[in-house]
Image (cartoon, rainbow, N blue to C red):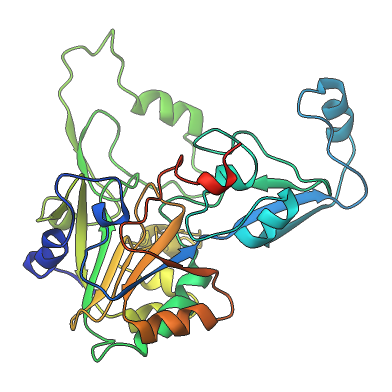
Length: 322
């Protein structure tokens, strides 16, 4: 997979989007596909093996709880399992906050079910690496070009691209370095009172300066760094470390990189498209009926059929409205 300055092969995506935005999936996923699937990002839940969580506002209870070591059972949880636990209804347009009985755009805090589990919101804009590998394996069977296509990453993820700023340039300190972390941050931050005439300088990012300064796939409200590569590269375990936007300096020092998942992926034959919109806690696939059917049957993925013009905004889940 390699960066490409020719972003014109993504023009078809922009041409298929609604302009202006209408508040549907077609603000970010092109029209024109026979079917659309929603892949729900897994969440997690946890509870003490040997007890129960103190009440959220029980300060003394938390102090006592934290004073004693506890084994915490943490497990992934599907949206359907969450709906069952909170006695709400799972459906294609479900929103997480509604499933956990919250009227906030986010669930707020750590909602608890009747069995004592605390729930963590599914990640927004990020499908986890294991789920991506499963999804990619299915997608590769439904294109004539599994080794060629477009892979786009939103440029707004922190530290991905370089830019003008006031901090110190990106650098790594090996274990045992003399400079303490807090001291480094203090010197890296701009002093608004004593350095009022300080000029911004170029701050390097994970990607090279050439890529950082290069062309973007410009979609409404979302500029993407575009790479040329195939979905077949995302099918194997450990694929994130092989991506060009992984932090290879960290990897060289034996540290985890945890690169962002792709925002948009499509094959050269345009048989389908996958979009993990930054503000969505699910990934949308535009596809044909054959791919849709296999996705619905794939273990390890939680998938439901989306109608065209589906509204996935936080307040759109009328079936679970309080």
